[in-house]
Image: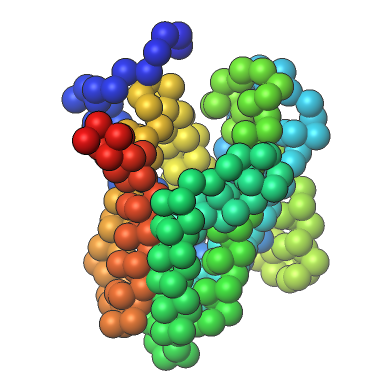
Length: 306
């Protein structure tokens, strides 16, 4: 797609943005459901198997070095989803996971300066400070009772957000090697986590439990894997990238602020999860930090115009 990005969202593009928000917001509930019948590592293995192997014969490999494809696949696949699935199994609530994962934007900001030479602006540091304060409030509000977020689940989810940020840096580095189709990129990079996930599943659980889980696969587990692979990854990623190709990033990325809203609502409806007061306060601070980060360019433009 060529030409300058269009600043006006059409009705179709608005619907695409909202579709991505809903898909990603429901994603955390689907993960929880999938983990009721599958271990974290086996769920990861099946998710990336379905997102990659059926499409390899029909999708051309991106013209990127293998090391970049492997780095992204292992960071985003094995790292991000491995930690996230593990955290959800060990007590991270689906709703809070949708909030904590948004910290990937600020982990990316912290690493982009020393690794890629990207200079952060003052409002970005302010947004980071506010959001980190919210993250600390969420972390302190852990508990061990039914339906409460555990500390280990919180830590593992924060690690998942960090690995998501690492994969963001790999994408930025990959852009220096030429253009590529996002759908092709995600299909081929999804190939790399498959064997490590299967190896970890066998190492942690042994062959017999893994075989038992595979033989007992029901429709709930299969539909969860299909949702994670086909909708949350391939479809949502393609729609989101198309929006970024057509419009300025500052107009598109604020829609991601709605993902935790959908995630919290879905977790409440599906599991009856109700955040504690400190978690509500922390969630508000995280979202405020993201708003500050996104609104900085608009504020600077208004200040210069005035």
